[in-house]
Image (cartoon, rainbow, N blue to C red; front, side, top):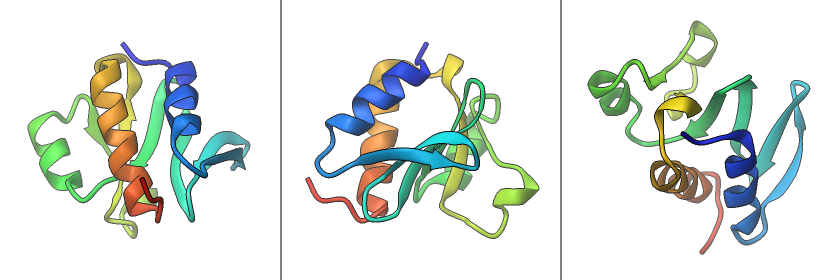
Length: 101
């Protein structure tokens, strides 16, 4: 089970990532937004695989009507992913947000 502390640690270990509030929630930015706490226990990330993730595991990956206009954004229930999955999601999101490894 991943936590907000895990998200923060992984994000801030990526080069150039900064943390600041977005919609009164912790958020992490590369060149653009890469991740944000949506609500307690739920993280927003960017992915090129939103449909596939939600289609294969809708209990973990989903979106709300708010996200319909942003096809790269997916919500992730942190309680349903482990540290390795979280790191992979955040690295992919970092690259999509303009980060460079």
